[in-house]
Picture 1 (tube, rainbow, N blue to C red):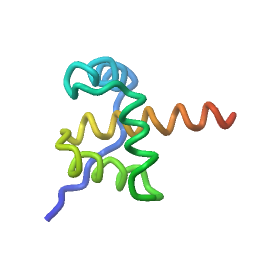
Picture 2: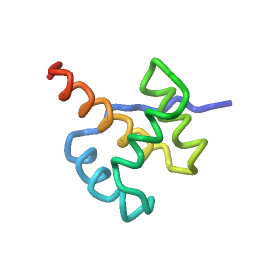
Picture 3: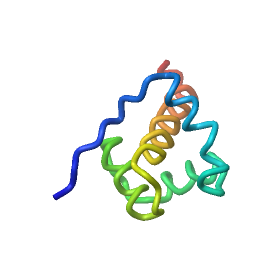
Picture 4: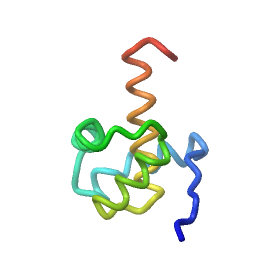
Length: 81
């Protein structure tokens, strides 16, 4: 049974997780964003985070942080902030 995970990090925790992604995962954020863009076309952020965690062996906290940052930057590029 899969445990639901929250995608609601505090801004402070989100910033700390994102800052540590390259050191913890060995990959820079743009690489993770490309993996998300090239991965399955999930509509929901939690589905993308679960896929990222399962497919790439990330903890759900880091997977969620990457997905949140990807979505934030995508919306920023599209002018939705």
